[in-house]
Length: 418
Image 1 (spheres, rainbow, N blue to C red):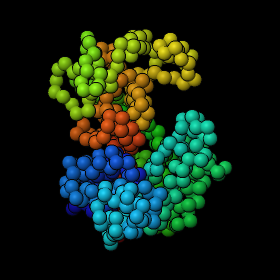
Image 2: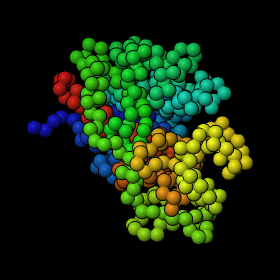
Image 3: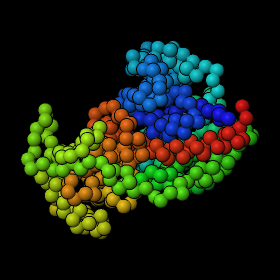
Image 4: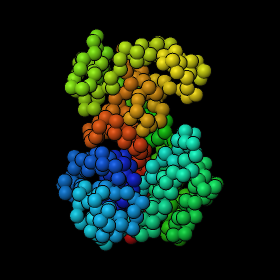
């Protein structure tokens, strides 16, 4: 007997990691995916066309380029003249006129999934902000998520974010309490603020070759016949029984890219490395790394400096650059361990993701970053190199998302009757 499929809307969809995981189960249908940065929008539209059999017109309609903060316009359409100037030409006319409500029509929305941008909740981000991110508008993007849940009234939702959310406190009130109260006010139940620390899961427990802790806030309708603990129990049960995946498992089979004897110029770009053998792999092209970088990488790897003290690492940075820093600036990923958390900072430089092979003397490529995030190797990323690194670092790892989706499906299928 064919099991029914459930529907979802993905908010803050990025380049599609969360959507991809849900779609890969073949148990869910994506009704709409909302994102406001053009490269991410184009990437997700391309994936729907390439993999999930959407026409170009339907992909444009389903992936809505829009600022979720304009929540009423997003839901109802009739975009203002100002909004149309910003977004209309990049969206399907029906969505402009009728909004999410018109796109969804009478179809029941079973789940709303997504995760507002995490920079305002990130402990690292707060440490580097003069105000501790207290004035950052992103602290309150959850309010738009709440409004959309309130309008479509799904049976449940999945809200993914960084563990730093638990300690974020803009306006002198913890975000976790604000989130709890906002969902409670619209008839949804999540774990109580002081219990949310139990909702932190690690991507490596779901076959992702990466240590990446994230808080998964699952909410359900009050008196809807399903509890949050039904879903959390299912999610815990879906942790992989396999051996933890490593960097070698993810990228060990990719062709080597070796430093050249002389730097060459291709257009305006300096090129320092070349793949000598094997078939070309899309987006498997490293950054330019000159002589200083290559000497840095060689010394770091040959001395196994990941295992040096904090002060020794800072002193090494000073030796290389002549500058001082309170932060560690270099690190290599290690073959037989999961990767550290892949971050959006990769769009600036790759010094915290030095490739472990001392022959290659480079930082990781876009494709390697994507594989460490468990994106399929045929996933196309559309945008500049910097934007590709950024969207990959901000994404939910696909296999982590797939584990969440399987867990949600099992509970819906056993306890929720339409």
